[in-house]
View (cartoon, rainbow, N blue to C red):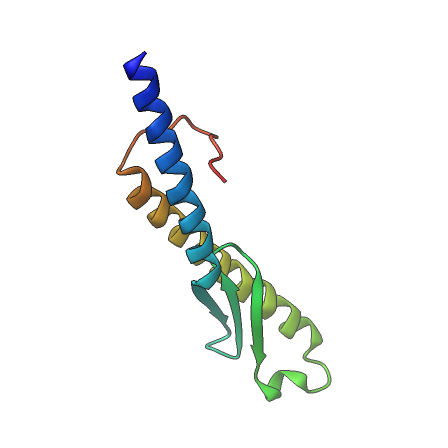
Length: 106
């Protein structure tokens, strides 16, 4: 019974740490850029879009397709950085604990 109580205490502590990590992920911003910085997308580490910057040269007639492609590329780079930030935070939180694949803690 003591093992079960200890396990429940650890689960409660992990839950509290996860909630704190979730709040921290909202505050972390990552940027993705494309076209040599002509387009920049800013996301939170949770993936919420916080901002987009587009160089005025891409607003010229005939640049629509280029702008669309650069937006996608910048967003993809920012998304990869956000995923890496989440992974780093999770590894720090779990202390390298091997969790089953596909286990969603949040």
